[in-house]
Image 1 (cartoon, one colour):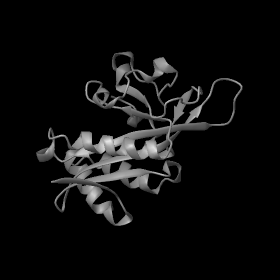
Image 2 (image 1 turned 180 degrees about the vertical axis):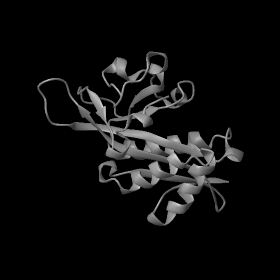
Image 3 (image 1 turned 90 degrees about the vertical axis):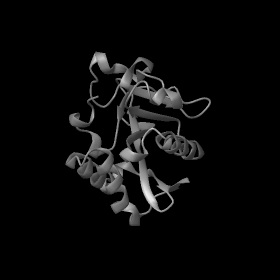
Length: 184
């Protein structure tokens, strides 16, 4: 039976194991995960692990984002959260675990009164959970330009009934403010 719970500082090895298995031992994902947990601009984070009995099989991370409004406004405004990364180990993929992680993470964000969630990901997968493709079209450009052919991969979801009307450039955690993380 799959269970999902919030992570603690004792879970970092399990998180890295899941992420590395899901991303084919990519050293870049290891660096990203370690750095995200150290970066104070991500806080408060929402980090969840999925377990099959005692075995960690999935992980999802939501980090804080801000909005840089248009001209004449200098201060950053609360912008919501960014879902990244999400990982399910290969032998557990296509069993609904990713969807369970997304739903539980979004439930927690709603309980925190977070207004919006953003994701850069597969435009045929995330809309199943309520994400709307091409967030730029709705006034939320990604931290770095997304090529036109991939514009639908940058998505947004309102988590409250009446979000504020603030629009603008999304500014993510310092660690993720690098072009290499914004290609899809």
